[in-house]
Length: 214
Ligand code: G3P
Image (tube, rainbow, N blue to C red; front, side, top):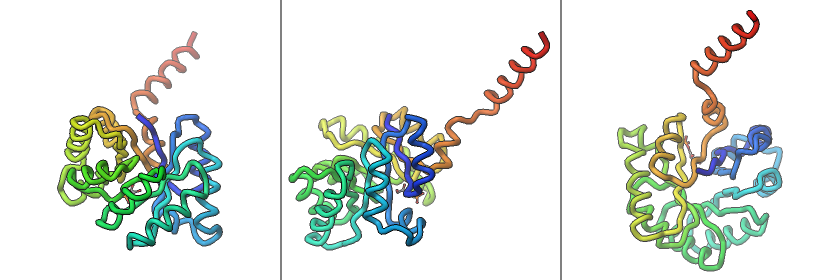
């Protein structure tokens, strides 16, 4: 399973990249706007692309087909690592099909149903991003959706990678891995939580104390 960081914060990205475990980055307009106005959007994603040796998702802001295509072409030229994020709308699917056919990698985002994921794959998206946390928030199983998408893609040999997004805790990652999802994109805090288990801490403390007694 590939690990992506869901962040536009350069300090977080540099720290996690230094572990050697980071495979890519996803950003979205909310995450970019949290970084303030110091850098322009294109400058920021370019810098992220230079830090991370893997795909970096940058989202279009237009909502109309022709403008989305134009924006995607501009974003794709920023760096070879760029994956253009398109929102799940009718125009988004049309734009995904158009630019994917021309060789631009697309991450189809804001996916909340398996029929939307089927459209993303038919349109040739490189990644589909189902939002598990936001589904859980409205009492619908995010993991059930991952199971369905993995099965559907397997049934038809779709090459679109299942990128689990809106991850809220380490169990979302473990369960996604059990279901065979290709990628988990997680906030910095959740990446750090993956290391933790109280029994690991207690066990190490005991080993070191016993060693000290000899
Ligand atoms: O990048 C999109 C997604 O991961 C957002 O997560 O926590 O805002 O639902 P969240």
